[in-house]
Image: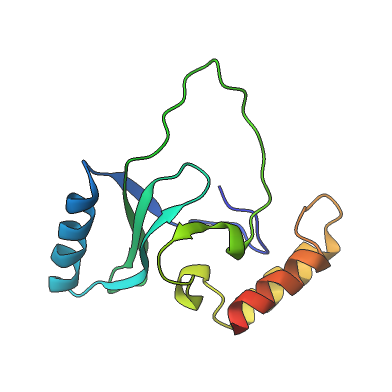
Length: 135
């Protein structure tokens, strides 16, 4: 799930065995015309090693390995999404990963989200997204 100005498919994630498999998967995808959207790095929440790619149609996929494992004894929680909290190490988050490319649909989604009082995407989050996209 994704909390942002719009709703829709963000990406599919596929667990692989280890860091070597993440890297080998990236080489395989690159040979087939995919381009890296962001990675290789390690997420903070979940602590998994990640690598994000876009296929030739711009659909995003993720390979990941070595994530935290939980069972039903762990209470679920909620954490705000911020670009500064996405990774412990790895390259800086990219505009491509954030999907912050300007478009008429993005503008419509932003206006709709800001008008919706039940949507947690507010002006503060918009300003944060704009800062990340311009960095």
